Length: 315
Image (cartoon, rainbow, N blue to C red; front, side):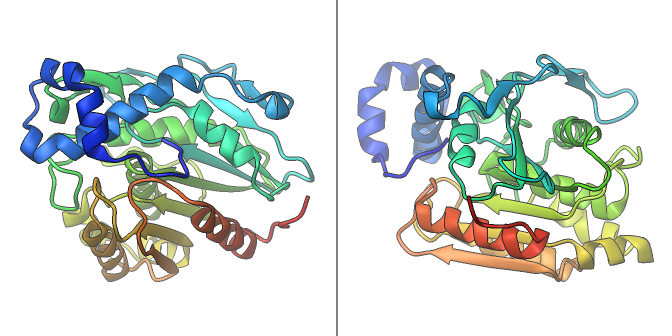
């Protein structure tokens, strides 16, 4: 979901009471999540066309409908369309950017196309449509299942996380060898990006299958760290894992007024990562920011990427 102004959750709930009553959701606990999903679902329906100004840089990838399992014996997952924003200058880096729950790759591709980062190629995939337990099994685009809570303490859909991490790695695997690779995302997409960071540092997926690519940057906006309870043990399992964790640049950004993924979870995710050896980490907070992005945050992303990847911030 991409927006630069805040919609009140109560207004959204009143406008979509029919949708809310159709789902078996505990509204006392999930009212805010429901409102977020409704907005994201609407975005999926209305944002599939890129603005004319960016048509020349945005295209549907040929791997529409690709599938991944994340390891032997895993379930096959059919993913949606991926959108590419081509670099306007020399191609120095490629970043896969992951949308939030119920959204698609098109909306973020439009925003990323406007950033002053001409040396970066962006790949914006669309998650598979799957039932989400937290929404009473209602199907929507999701990188993994949300079973109870969007927090570092919630139950983790490890199979779904691994499948998405494998899909992301596959998207990056055909990039030129001299191009730096990164992963970023918003909300659930940010969590999938952080899981990919853990797989890269550990050197393998949770299934034991080797992780195939080298990451140079990971970005999390308004997300949370999945599999937090086992992260430290994985990073301490070998000196190579510890070295990869310590050298991987990670940026986490979170709004203090986030009503969907609480600011406390952003802080705790940062603490878990640091205590697990991810020392090359930057955490930025934003007063008054809810569960959406703003120009100030995206400007910080641009500055951080320019510094960490050595790319220009000019047109």
